[in-house]
Length: 361
Image (cartoon, rainbow, N blue to C red; front, side, top):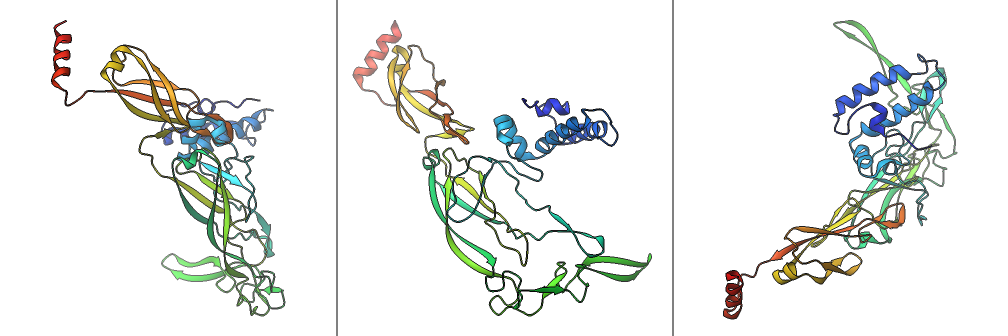
């Protein structure tokens, strides 16, 4: 089923402020929340409102949606950011266009710990790198290598940090992961709960320290990683490689690797969305009489017919000669060229005489 326009879902205009969007969301969320609205479609409408708000309340997501519509937010999940290309695996990573944009911050998994307290499952830190690309290189599929430094689980202790491979409950917090302290204040005696300083909030410590990793559970590694960049990659685009970040101590999921693409500007071409813009000078006779000229595009020179009487500043569209559309390699944007009439600053006596004769007519 075709998705509704997010602005229509929230009932706001496309130039609505962030405050207006938030206000509209709160009103509709209360109206359709399943706990208060028992109609059959309330749950679906509530999810629809949530999805619209998650996109329009985020500056990057909103920009991607305004430019590309729903295709620009495909694969977004709560907490995500715009312009993310998701990849799976790590090392010699296959190019996967299935999940275009994915969440920026992972995690969110919980487990029940001692005493009934809910604790977030351990997750390693994310890693972030940048790659600079030539403008022309960004128009085609590229494969580059980056040197990635990350923490990997210690093989000797299986990431436990313990010589025996086993971990025990922390004596300080008794495996809970948090400690309670009491402090006197002008308001009276107050209690505070914080992560245990001895186990870092994990609730577990090594039985005996691993000699290889000194009880850290992880070891610093460095390796070259192949990054496949899709044709049409744009400045500021971020590629996400699930599981390519640091490993946590003990059980848990590794973080992700994020690679931001920095596309260097071109001396002739300017990219706007998937379209390419350029300017080209033409002489006065061509503008007056018309002619066929050669126009430079990212895909080579193209012949363009200029009709007689063309004014300076006229823009011509050359179809499908723009940038490749990410996730749709068979599609391209268009190329727009602006023709500027070039007036000669110096002319010969013969040319001056001809121009003077034309002016008399």
